[in-house]
View 1 (spheres, rainbow, N blue to C red):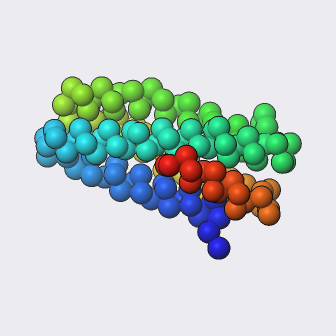
View 2: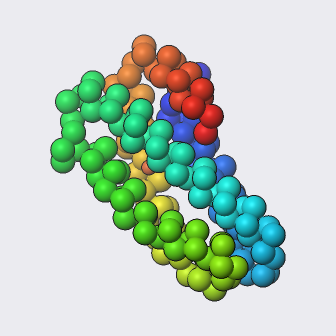
View 3: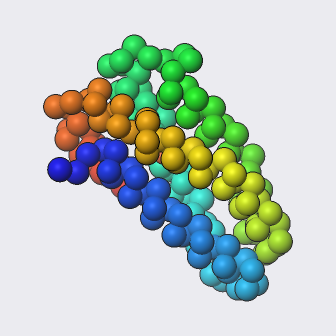
Length: 147
Ligand SMILES: [Fe+2]
Ligand SMILES: [Fe+2]
């Protein structure tokens, strides 16, 4: 059965693929591809974070009573740490600055890779568990938000 955890993990993988294509374009100085893939990467990652912060984490916090000091609070904090780097990536895309894109991309991955691992190994399983029978309905809501 598809759960929210499985769905969101697949979204991580999809976003990782777009990120790789964007970095390859930055290295190759292929600005048209960097604009397409870099913008798509930023759009998808921001949307993913929005779904987590606006829908999934509140549902988790409501059901478990775990808010401040809990796992979702830590995930939100890591999302915050990503924000200035996402702005740097955006500037590098519009400025056609391959080295700056590569530099910011490495800085982002230093946060994003362990972040996604924590979500996949801890946050999402706890969320699926907390949602129980309400999981499928919330998954439909998430899909309707068109990641
Ligand atoms: Fe996240
Ligand atoms: Fe995530």
